[in-house]
Length: 155
Picture 1 (spheres, rainbow, N blue to C red):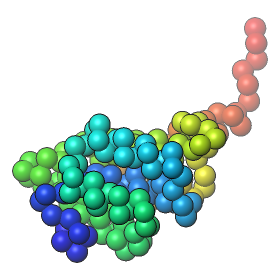
Picture 2 (cartoon, helix red, strand yellow; picture 1 turned 180 degrees about the horizontal axis):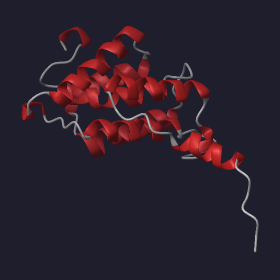
Picture 3 (cartoon, rainbow, N blue to C red; picture 1 turned 120 degrees about the horizontal axis):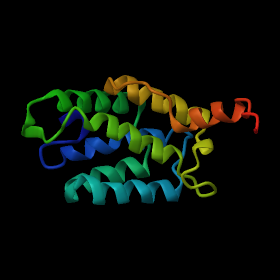
Picture 4 (cartoon, helix red, strand yellow; picture 1 turned 45 degrees about the vertical axis):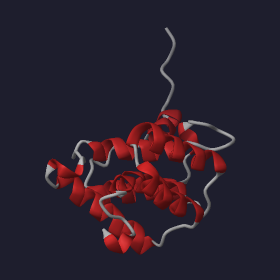
């Protein structure tokens, strides 16, 4: 983890890396996404001051693809490690759900499943693959498919 700038004092921040990866998918992070990620960090993950410093760095300058890949692999490894790391394997699916919520967060369409871009869909697929999580359909894709489905006949 040292090569990622992460140690025992701030390792919980790794849980936010999937969200940050998806937030950067379009090449820039909107302020509303940045705020939502910081809110999740404070209210869900208790990352502490050292973790927040790392998070702020990720939100200010996009980490490299190699950094993201290594960080997501480290996150998966920690979730499978003994309990001393305070990671649970079940949390990986929750992190994917949070990442999808970030993809749905835009200034013009807060939490609209149809607001997820193709680049964000690819990023979400990258995250699920890297974390070894079931690659179920995202809400945005499901809503899109339902929108294309024929409407039931009224009786």
